Picture 1 (tube, rainbow, N blue to C red):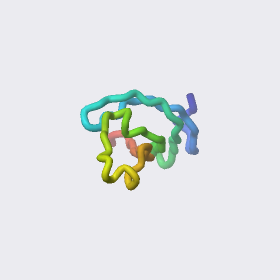
Picture 2 (tube, rainbow, N blue to C red):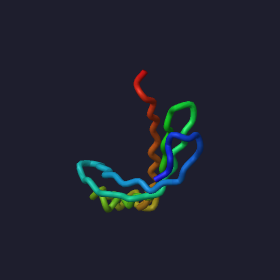
Picture 3 (cartoon, one colour):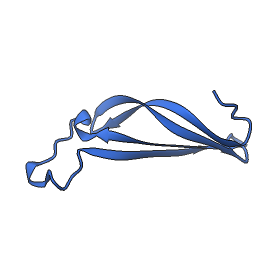
Length: 81
């Protein structure tokens, strides 16, 4: 675990549950935590198969819609003043 009391950018492994259309799936992916001015900024980009969340692509548009999409998650945290 990185020392988040020191400014810098840290590579981490994050775990969580993504729910799309009522279908929840656990993911463990790589991400970054950036510490600056007492705040944390987090980000992660990962691939999700739409079929894993029971999203059906209509056959008429199947060539126009990706079966795997990139999901980007970002967030910031600042302690209460």
